[in-house]
Length: 105
Ligand code: SF4
Ligand code: SF4
Image (cartoon, rainbow, N blue to C red):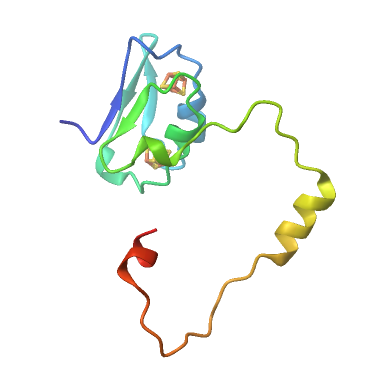
């Protein structure tokens, strides 16, 4: 089984995956989407997340990790700004073991 598959029955040839893939792995050929050099896929998941018809599957990516946003969801700009400003990366590590389950999540 190929790592990246496009279901021709579901694909509506919108071209979004062609534009979005930073590795340029999708091409439109005779109105069908084809995948090139899939070994260069970095598993970013953009194509799976944006495809409007869920036509793309990638073996190593769990489709359940890309739930659709609830319809009508509106995040107030102030809430979004607070969220973005509060985002920090931890660069100091404690001498404490992290449970396997937490790491995997
Ligand atoms: S994003 Fe999905 S529907 Fe659009 S061209 Fe790609 S595979 Fe087809
Ligand atoms: S997961 Fe990322 S790199 Fe791989 S095909 Fe999709 S958009 Fe391209």
